[in-house]
Amino acid sequence: MKINLNPETDPQSKIIVAMDVPSAAEAINLCDRLPQVSFWKVGLELFIADGSTILRELKARDKKIFLDLKLHDIPNTVASACRVATKYGADFLTIHASGGSAMMQAAQAEAQGSSTQLLAVSLLTSISATELATDLKVSLEVSEYVSKLVLLAKESGLTGAVCSPHEVKNLRSQLGDDFCFVTPGVRPAGAAVGDQSRVMTPQEAIAAGANYLVIGRPIVAAPDPVAAWEKICQALT
Ligand SMILES: O=C(O)c1cc(=O)[nH]c(=O)n1[C@@H]1O[C@H](COP(=O)(O)O)[C@@H](O)[C@H]1O
Image (tube, rainbow, N blue to C red; front, side, top):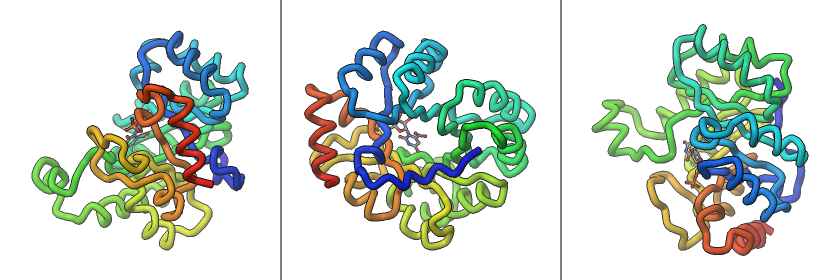
């Protein structure tokens, strides 16, 4: 486990591009079209299709890797999965905070001493305040619920979390500068929001205190991914 707080000032280094494509061949093509991207996220679709291939290729290209497996199971199962997943040498690996403290502690015990930092996923950025209340039957406000999950992650020994940019400012003031916040739910002005609910622009997310932004479709599904990437970088400088 290391605390990856991204002290670099270069705004490009704060963007993690989500490789949400169905095969290693497509992922490698994307990676080679965007050599400026230093940090890539491998999610469930790609990992299930071709996980070990793409992780090996990203390592060979000296890229940073966010392995987004969102593990959520009983403590023993998640700990065992973490033991195996950390062998890939990714920089970040996700588990769900809602799995509870015992699960997070067991996972952290496995990640400790590896080069992989665990991130606790709080409330998915696709979930709106209405869904939280009506579908999930949670009576707390979104910000309060996310705070509780992130504080539980910190108490369980984790040093980073995933949440929407909307919750970062408040959490940053509670947890200080030593905690790593990674925020999906990022949309450049005018981009399609799609299935995301709690979104902000890249500039707003950085201003709110995010260490890293996760951006997928606004780059990967753009007609010209290189132009989309450059436009986002320009907006951040
Ligand atoms: O853990 C994540 O990365 C994640 C957590 C979350 O709450 N919301 C969320 O969108 N993500 C991921 O971030 C990426 C966002 O992609 P776009 O909505 O296309 O920008 C996807 O790969 C999601 O799986």
